[in-house]
Structure formats: C-alpha cells, structure tokens
Length: 110
Image 1 (cartoon, helix red, strand yellow):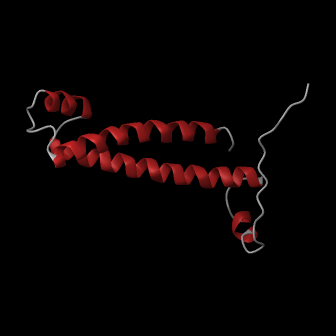
Image 2 (tube, rainbow, N blue to C red; image 1 turned 90 degrees about the vertical axis):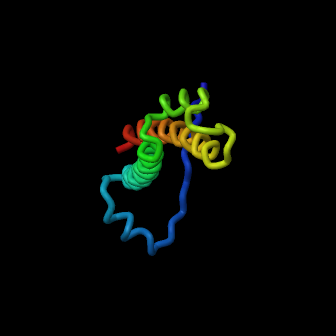
Image 3 (tube, rainbow, N blue to C red; image 1 turned 90 degrees about the horizontal axis):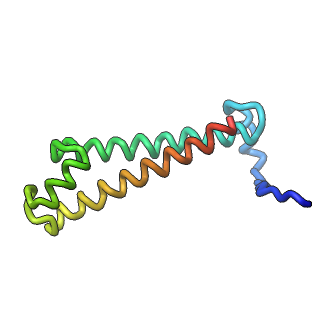
C-alpha cells in the first residue's frame, strides 16, 4: 500500500530567504501558513466591513432584508441597485463561510 502526499515544492529567490526567516514560525511551512493566515484574515475583515456597510445602508440583517425584498417592502426587487446589493450581500455571506473554512485549515499548520 503506498501513501501519496500532496507536497508542493516551491523555489524561492535567495532575496526572499531573509524576509521569510524574519517571519513567525519555526519551519518554512509554519512561516508560510502564518502569512496565509494573515492574508485570509484581511480578506475576512474586508468581507465583514462590506457586509456591515450593507446592514447600515438598509438598517437590516440579511435575513430581514431578504424577507422585505421578497415582500416588495424595499421597492422593485429587480431594480438595478437593489438587485446588485442583494446579490453582493449573498456573495459576502458565501465568502465569509469560505474564508472561515480556510482559517480552520490553516490553523492546524501553525
């Protein structure tokens, strides 16, 4: 029975080594995981900021927004701005879930 790994070999410029050495973590994998965690957190924070902006704009959480939209209480649900906000808000919810899953995967590597 053979075991296969999904190891990835990355060749870095010698100029990158001192920068990588200065990062948190003991091994290169831990250092890269730390950097990836920081980037995923930034994406998650940006996602949350944009979601909060929509909550402030409408004074509602997404579930309430969706109910009012379907009931026609917010205007024409197919109006460009309203439809775009609804689609973006839904995308942000999916993105948040995805980013949280990424964080979970990376936290085991630190």
